[in-house]
Length: 467
Image 1: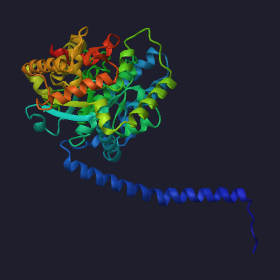
Image 2 (image 1 turned 90 degrees about the horizontal axis):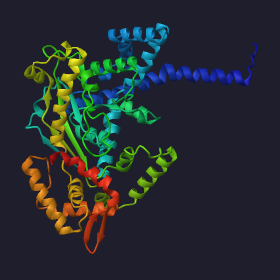
Image 3 (image 1 turned 180 degrees about the vertical axis):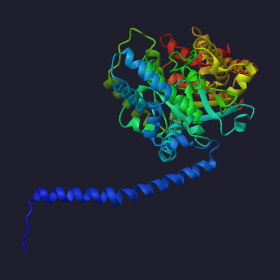
Image 4 (image 1 turned 90 degrees about the vertical axis):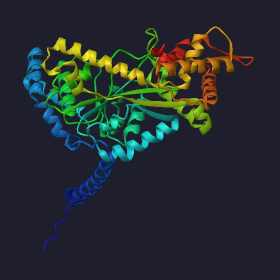
C-alpha cells in the first residue's frame, strides 16, 4: 500500500471545497426551507387581519418581474427608439433598460416589513411625536372593495411621512412608496427595497427610463398593489401645499379601462406636525444664494441633534416635538369618476389626457387640503404672524387662537383640540416656539422674532388655505 502525501495548501483547498458542497447541498436547502416556512407562517397570520391582503405579485421572484418589464411590448418599442436615437446596438439599449428595471423593482419581504419595519416605524413615530389619527370619510374607506387598487395620496411635509403613514396603515395593508435617490445608500437601500418601496429618479429626462418606470407603475397598479403617492412630487419648502405633479397619476390612468379593469381608489391623506425636523433645511433650499452644505456638516449636525434630544426627558421631548396628526379623507373611485365625468383616459390623446389628469389631480389635491390637520403650533404661528409687531400676553394669544378655532370649526376645518384641554395645549405650543428661540419674551409679553419670520410662516402656511 502506497501513501500519497499532499501539500497542506491542496488539503486546505479540498477541505474548503468540501465545506462549500456540504453548505450548498445539505445545510442551505434546509435553512431556506426553515426560513420559508417561517415567512409563510407570518404571511398567513398577517393576511387574516389585513383588510387588503398582500398581492401575489409581491411574492413573485424579483428577477421574473425585471424580465417581464424588459420584455414588455411598450418597453421593447422604447428600447428600439432609444437605440436608434443614440446610435447604439440594440443589446446595449436593452442592457440599460434591464439596469433601470433592476433599480426600480422592489424586493418586498413580508417578514421584514411587519416584523422589523412596522416595529421600527411604530417606535420611532411614538418616540418623537404624540400621534393622532382621524377619519373624515363618512365610513367609506371600510366599504372599499378589497380587490381594488388602493392609492393613498398625501401631502408631503417631512421625510417622517413615510414612517408615520406606514405605521398607521400597517393593520390594514402594506404600502409601496416611490422613494427619491437620497435613499440609495448601503445598507439603507436594501431595507427600503425589502419594505416594498421603489426608487425613482426625480425629473429624469431619459425617455427609456421613464417608459420602464411607467410600465412598472402600470403593472403594480393593475396587480392591486397598495401604493402611497405624494401628489406634490416633493417636500414643501415654504409650508404651503404645492401644485400637483401629474406623472404618477398619468402612469396609473393612461391604460386604465373603467369598464373592464379593477377599480383604482384614491384615498386623500392630510399630514401635519407641530415640528418638522428638517424645517430649516427645507427653508434653506428657497435661498438660491445659500452655499450647499457638506456631507460632514450634515452628519455632524444630525448626530448633534439626535444626541441632544436623546438626553431630554419624555416630558420635555413632547414639549419639543408636539403632535403629529394624520387625517384620512373620503375616497375617490377612478371608475366612478370616469362614469360621472364621461372620461376614458385610455382613449385620449396625450395632450387631452394630461388636461383630464390635471383636473382629477387638482380635485384630489383639494380633498387633501380639506383634511390637513390644524395642529397647535400652526395655529399659534398664524396668530403670532398676524400680530408680528405687537407684544401680546399669553392670555391674549390664547384668546386670539380660540377665536381662530371658532372660525376654522365653522369653515369645516379638521381640528381636534378639545375645549377642556385648549389652554394647556396652546400653552405648550407657545412654550415650544419660545424654547426654539422663534418667539421673544419681555415682561410676560410675547412677540415673534422678526428674524424668524420665514420659519413662523412655514408653520402658519400649513393651514393658510383656510383663510
